[in-house]
Amino acid sequence: MKYNLKLVPVLCALLLGISAKAQETWSLERCVQYGLENNISIQQAKANVRTSLLAERQAKASRLPNISASFDAGQQFGRTIDRTTNQFSTISTGFNSVGLSAGMSLFNGGQIHHAVKQASWDAQAAQADADQGANSLSLQIAQAYLNILLFEEQLQNAQKRVSQSQEQLNVTLKLIDAGTLPMADKYNILAQIAQGEQASVQAQNNVDLAYLSLKQLLQLEPDYDLQIERPVIQIPTDANPDETTLSPVYATALTTQPNIRAADYRIKSAEEGIYLAQSAYYPSVSIFANLSSNYSTAYKLPGSYLRIPEPNLPVRLDGETKSLQFIGDTAVIPQNIRTVKYLDQFDQNFGQSVGLSIRIPIYQNGRVRLNVERARLSVLTAQLQQNQTHQQLKNDIQTAIANARAARRQLEAAQKSFDANQIAYQNTVKRHDLGAVNTLDLTTARNNLDIAENDLTVARFDYLFKLKILDFYEGKPLRMN
Image (cartoon, rainbow, N blue to C red):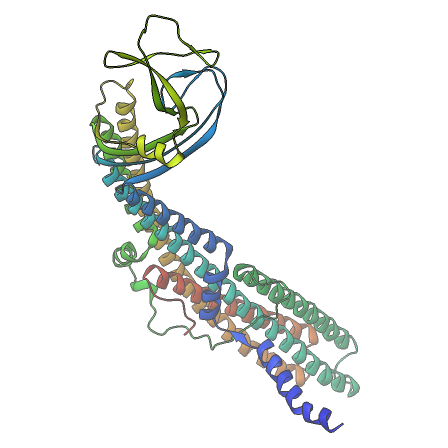
């Protein structure tokens, strides 16, 4: 029992730690960082970068010599050529051969050099594409983050309106009891409370969907207990979209936007493709060296010779006709035939070669010329894509500026509307408490104020997000403060 009591503080500490971890809130910076590390699209882009880097390493490795070894072993049957004696044989023969060869390109029209440069540009373009994907994901996360803040604020406003309507019902009931207001006013306020509760349910659903959208971007499980920070949303006082113009923002974006760099890199890669195609016009020069040796079970040598004084007479020995060989003017018959040992054969058959190979293209069915033309068209395509990217960037920046200006004016108008409706509602409440207006007028004033408050909330978050987009084109980090 004492032992169990000692465990209570430890268990409490663990539970508190788990609870604190479960209730940990995520800032926008943390959401963006986590998304960049875990989002599937970003992981795919990183894999493409690694693939491009491997291609660059492979292109550089083409400058190195290639070395290969070979080993063959087997059994020959029928009429074949013995690999060691180079003679026809009809007996079953075992063979074994080994070899070592090396080669290295000395000149191939600059093909390797330009292939390395093209692979380098391709790798940089892939990295720029990955950076562009990271920027796009960051904007999506920021928008999802702001949507949560917006919907949570709308939920709080809806719950506050239900509470205020409940308080107004209490006041109305007292006035009804006093005979100041008719009983119908009670049902009007009850209907208003029901509408407020319905709006609260819808706002809560919007919050849940916004959290689900953010979890999808972060590759989190749908049931993960995610809570974001609720920073004080303040509109920058120094922000003035009316004074923002296209030229300076565009000039800055040209140096900060990865898709611009990617388009530039692809033009350079396509230009290297022209040199690669033209390299086929030139001869190629390479050096090579080979080492080889063979073994055969048919490779045999005589241990001694039997001299024959009359070479013109038929010679039979041990019931077999023996072939004659001549040493000088003397005919001999090999005796004591023996198979050369394995290592001795490799030593006796050891061969070496070294040489220089030159290949000169003369006529290739016009393929080289067509490849060059195709490479030039690739450069033209890359240039057109670059122009389109620049033009799209201009359009996006001009649209962002126009949206920020419109969002600012909308915020100013929404603020004026809210202030006016708030004063009107407060005046209507006072008059309703005095019995000067009916509940219908009070409900109308309340609804107008709710609409104005919701419009103000939406306008505030919309303007803030439009400013964040301008910051994005200016290369500024995404932060809430």
